[in-house]
Image 1 (tube, rainbow, N blue to C red):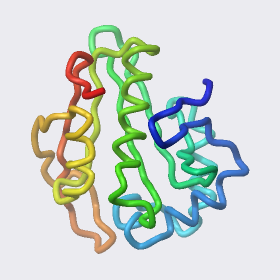
Image 2 (image 1 turned 90 degrees about the vertical axis):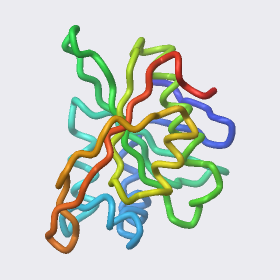
Image 3 (image 1 turned 60 degrees about the vertical axis):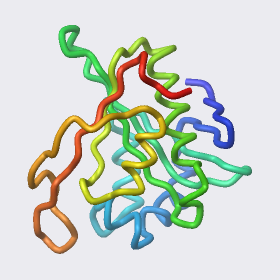
Image 4 (image 1 turned 180 degrees about the horizontal axis):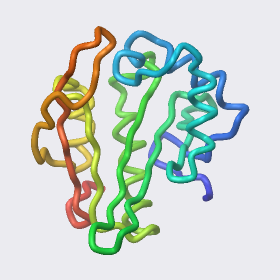
Length: 170
């Protein structure tokens, strides 16, 4: 895959050399709350990079790593779609960079990969993420009750959102 360029961000295939910077971002309290993992975040990221079903892209802004966006595809013809997930450095939250990254990848998945439908599943209480995804055109589908376990061990709801190809806000 080539580098995907948004209005402010560049999305490029994640390489092993990106792992320390990405692990540092995933280790921030704001990100760790949403993107759990084991005690060794670098090992978790290395495992993600080895997963043949997940494509990891490093998000760069002003020649600096600010996060990672990843996607996977369901290739069964009768259910074909792609899913997206994202984390960004809290230092850049609120600047529209997440929206730019999601929009850039969504357009690539629709225009180049030929997907007609995309999904994303933020925590139901993650209003900033939901607002970001809504700006790209994602719509709420429904609440997935007790969808994921939180850091405190309790279960939390997720929000399933989807985007059809003709609904993307470009």
